[in-house]
Every structure is written in structure tokens, then in C-alpha cells.
Amino acid sequence: MSAIGYGMGDLYGGGQGALVATYLALFWNRFCGMDIGLTQGVIGMSAILSAFAALGFGVLCDNLYRFRVGRRFGRRRLVLAVVAPAVLVGFLLWIPGLPVALYCLVYVVWVMLAQLFGTSYSTLPGEMTTDFSERTTLSTVRLFLATASGTLIPLVGGIVLATVGEDHPGGYMGFTFVVTAMFSLAIVICWHSTWEMTPREAGFGVYETLSRGAQGSVHRNAGRPAGQTCSVIRTWTHRAAVMLREYLSTLRIAEFRRHLVVYVMVMVSMDLFGQLFLFFAIYDWGSSAAFGSMLLTCAVISLPLMPAFGWAVVAIGPRRLYAINFAGCLIGVAWLLASWLCAGVMPRPAWTVFTVIGALWFFSFKSLCGYLPWQVFPYMADVDHIVTGRYRSATFLGTQTFARQLCSGLLSIGVGLVLAATGFDSQHGTQPFAAHIVIGAMLLGWFAVAMIVGWIASQRMAISKETDAILLDEIARLQHGGSKGDVTDKTRAVVERLTGVGYEQCWPSQEA
Image (tube, rainbow, N blue to C red; front, top):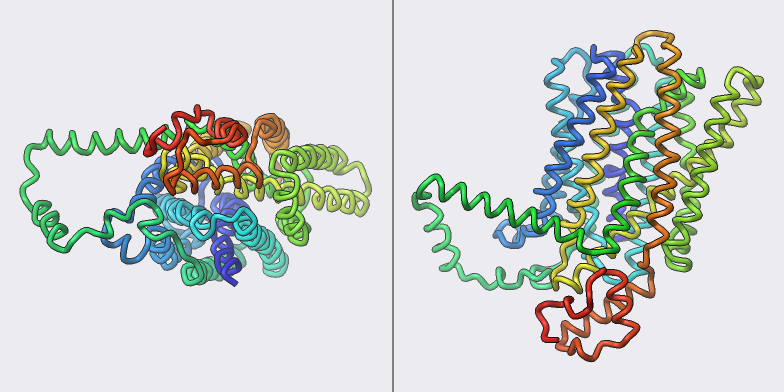
């Protein structure tokens, strides 16, 4: 039950992205007076702002145990409790006639809330258990529910639009209001069902022992005049430098660098796909938004496959599963391209059957694309733990989210500029020929390139159930006073392969 409760959080984590990516650009473009360049610019700039916010959120969430509020309410679950009611601000995104500046501001807040939630939520598997199989179960249930959310949102949305109509905003509004309220409820359930490391387990035990007198002294000192302005500036500059060093230090870990390349290529391609797919279905395939939404629900085929995905991660390892995944995605991209080329050539019923079968194939592997990086991520903090002696999962999450959001934001802005340059405007029934070509090329071309690059990077990864177990056993041995000089050759080789650091440089708190 705890796995289901934890997984409920990704009804929001996965669903909010599906909701926004599928409908927001189309809604703003049709009903809110925003052209495609401005729409994509807002989405892109918000992603870039979120990228930089991720850096602060990561260090903040990792260090909340330094503060009384964190020790009382938790460093992860406190964030969940704050985000749950705050997501209701998303109602304002779906009300026509508001000032454009308000849409922009609310969307920035919406993206920041999703980023803050993800920073804490995605670290919980590593805090709730150290067992490889149990972590896999938590992540599998989480991603099952995320996929279900990402599938049901377009399915229900397509039914609503087909029933109410696509030419007025009422259907969009009623549907998105209900979904947003459900997001808030899902976060509350997740908050109630999860737990995290104690301050002592997370390496912050010293803060538990602070006396009330010491704390009072700290607060009394904090109330005194700050001193010279230059001193304050030096203090904040020092803090910023320390934070930057924390994030840069994550790139020292070899396995994380390999994971980061795969993660960014996969996630950015999925962001772009979500933003463009409905446009692709409407203008390149000559279909409706309802039909495009229905095709997005083909991801439902991956739900019964989730247990098999979890078994494969443990049985054959992430590296081999990545190879299968990327090969399947490339076949799916070729299938969607064939559907585009055959639109208007094949009889419509035959084309529809051909396209639906291709979508089932493509979205099953696309779902695995979203599944694998999150299965691998919890083990990055384990690899870092043996190097630094600290468990810094939120810092690693901040680094990878910064990279993903920055790349995604820049790409979104670029997409908007290119489409605007072609004369694209979704308020018109027809689009310039160049816009049709650009939509298809960006959607399918970028996805294919991302799969190839991710495939190459993934084949150098070494994390698996066996190597993680060796790593955790060595950490436990060192924590209990074991000598680094007693390490076995196999353990040394695994540690150095995963970390990219000489074994003698690991576990600095211990004597060699």
C-alpha cells in the first residue's frame, strides 16, 4: 500500500506535464489571443527559469534538516504539504480573457511548483528503502500511475472535446479544472503515505542535538545589525559559490554523467513531442484534436507491461533494456513517418488502422523511455555516497533537472520562432506548406536523433542490481569502521567503474 500511496504523487508529477503539453499551447493560441511564437516563448522561458530554480530547490531540499522547520516537518514531505494546495493556482491557466501577463505569471508559478514537487518526490525511493528490488517496485508503481495519468488525461480530454466541441473553451475549462483538483488530492495522499530518512540517517544528526539555548543564541545573534553591506554581499557570494560547487561536484561521478546524457536526450525529446503532437495530427495528418488525443491514449498498452519492465531492469539490467527501448522507438518513429507520407494516399479506414497500430507500437516504447531513467536515477546518490560520505539525492536531481529544463526551454523557444517564421497560426484552418514540413521534421527528426545519442551513451553504463549491491555493502562496511585497505579487487573495480574516481580518493572520512 505504501508503494501505491507513493505512486499517487506521480498522478500529478506525470499528469501535469501531459495536461500542459497536450492542450495549453492549443488553448492559448485559439482562445487567449496568443500567437504561437509568444506561446512557445512563455513555455520555453518558464522552463529556463525552472532550470535555475531547480539548483536552489535541490540544495534547499537536501539541507532542510539544518533548520527547525525541516526537523519538525521533514525535508521532503514538508515540500509535498506546501505544494498540494498551491497547485490550484493552475485554474487560472484555463480561463479565457485574462491579461497575457497574468497567464505568463501563473504559468511560471505552475512550472516552479512542479519543479519543487519533483525535487522532493523523486528522491523518496532512495530514502524509503535501500533494497534494489524494493526501489524498483516503488518506481514501477510510480511510473505505472504516471503513465495511467498521462494516458487518461488525453483520453478523457478527447472524449470531452468530441462531445462538447473543439471550437469553444467550455470543454477545455471544465475538464482541466477537475484534473487540477485531482492533482492536489493525489499529492495529499502521497504526503500521507510516505516517509524519509531521519536527520541522523541523512547525515544531519548534529542538528538534532542543538540545545534550545544554542538555538536561542543563534536567533539573538541573527537579530543584531547585519554590519556592512559588503559583508552581506560576501556572505551571499560565498553561499552561491558553495552551492555551485555542490552541483558541479555531481559531474565528477562517471555513471551520473552517462545517465545525464541519456536523461536529457530522452526527456527533452518527450517534452518537444508533447508540445507538437496535436499540431502534427491536425495539420500533417489532416485529423482532429480529438483523434490526436485518442492516439495519445495508446500509451495505455504500456500499463500491463510495467511489471515486465520492472522485472527486466532487475534481470537483464538497465544497459540492455535501454538498447531494446531505443531500437523500438526508432522503429516507431519510422512508422509515424510512414503514416504521414500515406495520409491522403491510403483509403482513410486503412490509414486509420495502420496509424493506430503504429501508435500502439510507438507509445509502448515511448513509455519505456520515460520509465528507465527514473529507475536508474535513485542509484546515482548511492554511487556519490561512497565518494563523499553524504547522501545528496536532491542535489543530483537539481543538476539533471537544470540540464533538462534549460535544454527544453531553449528548444521550445526555438520551435516557436521557427513556426512563427513559417506563418503558422492555429486559428486558421489551413497552414503554409513550410509549417507542415517544419512540424513533422522537428517532431520526428529530433526524436530520432535523441534516441540514437541516448543509445550510444547508455551502452557505457554499469549500474545494475549486482553492482549496486556491491556498492552498498562496501558503504556499510566503511560506515562500521572497516579499513579501505581491506577492499577486494572486485569491489575496487566496481567502485572505480561507477564513480570514475580512484578508490583511494573515495570515502574521505575514513583512513586509507
